[in-house]
Image 1: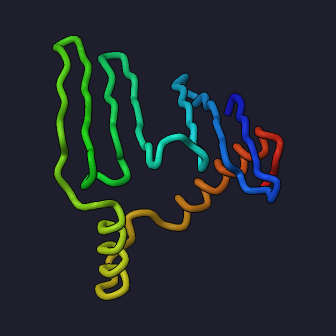
Image 2 (image 1 turned 90 degrees about the vertical axis):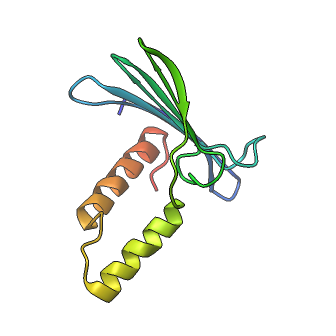
Length: 129
């Protein structure tokens, strides 16, 4: 992690957080999230690579206003990817694990790794969770 900045309510709730990351192989990432926004819902992601860029509008609810914008040397295109909402997918995976004993897509090690990153962001922003 390179740096992080957060803002909290008087009650201690994190209302805004931004973080910049640098990975050992040189890649970088930036994350911004907020509970206080002029937008009712605004969720997006962008990936820049050596051969182009992909912008994703609403990656968490693909059933609502979802689209991908691909920009590459070959040109620009917009695509929509059909599919169920992420909560539907989570529920199906949970039911399959409970009813059929199917493996879950992400196990405890992923959860622990995610919490370590979240704690590192809080610490870099000056507030340990």
